[in-house]
Length: 560
Image 1: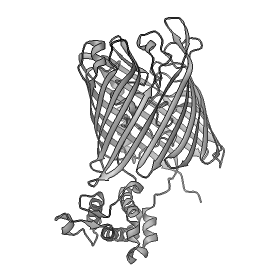
Image 2: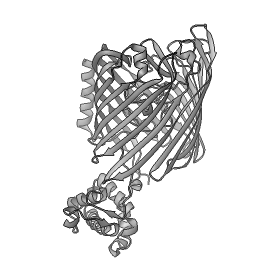
Image 3: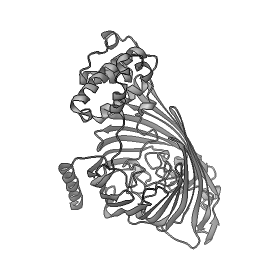
Image 4: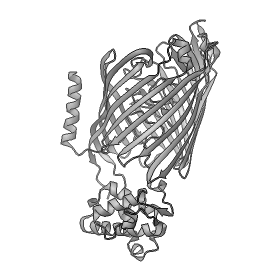
């Protein structure tokens, strides 16, 4: 436990001796979170997604925002009592008048004290209102004379690159389960247990030039309770990335690094536990702005590989049409395994497409697998022939003044009757490196290849997911998700009905650097559990998790 105390002291020193800021992910391309993000994620919308109907009441988000901001900055025009008290509605044009009154005092304050006098969060809130009511604002002369100034104030600031950044990030989580063994993530009737998990990543990033990035991350990861008592400390990431000066044509990254692609359905970084990194290199080629090719290869890095040893290599191509609209194609070859046999490997061939139409987002990702899988019964390799994939639909909207997001998904992995009978498993679709919320929050299903209960195996899974999230306030989000699971193949006289997982979480964002998650999940076991174990008791799981990300940063001086 002394090691835990030392790491916590490190965090305290950083927090007390620096200006905290949210650290970028090592790549600066994909953010890294330290929770298993539900499919609906945080339901807050960007300014372009927030819509205002022709008539609104005081319960609508726009009225609430204008009333709060107007009170905070002393706007001369306030929402009338007929709206606030009597509940009458306002037209968009009338609402724009009250927004203009707020913008007038903000402009005056910025003229006197500078833009930094207004918190960035408030500017973003005003920007969302401004974008939604721009057509109505232009009708007022007071707006047309200050429009250019208002737009400059509300504009997103350019990201200033940093010279160096040091800090620490990670999570502390306490969790408990009933009818479930946490150490093996397996069904265990009449057993209850709890444990504490910490993941702390001290880091140092140095960008001496625009074409050279150096990243170093250590990691402390420990589990205490539930029959486990372990602490691991090692290098998690450490790499150098260089590119051609003044060009994005070529970029080479060499060293220990994560590989995260798409929505992490195939390749993720196991962010809910101890992560996943590789001693590898990655060459990124960008012949034209919308098109990138990643050529990658490396070996699983211990001790945070879950016992896997071997290599991962592949190519990943992305063509981005516009924000939220992209087409991707990839191929990975993976022979990572606790035990190695000559010729054994998994080849994954996949396509991924994303499209965004207003408040609706769609993602489609089909995959095919080939390769060789060692058969313990015959002592030889079987040819892999499996398929899988998922289709997701997300819809964001405002209901009763609150931002809501709805999520619908279907995921499938092929299976085989031979696998259910324990003979051979070459027709099972495997995505063991996934970091996908489609598998559920409880990890009863680790991937789509199947599930083991007692000494019985259900081969290949179909998962139907329905999720909903709501921003109760700007800081507080509630989400509820259901995953209905059916097996493709089972033993004779066994049911294919696996069960229904329900996940509930409450996320409080304290600041950009701190958040707290409280979650409760229940798995309603299906007939397969009773057929396999003689028990039908449901699985309970809950956790409380504190996430943090602290950094001290030195920004680069602006270029002359």
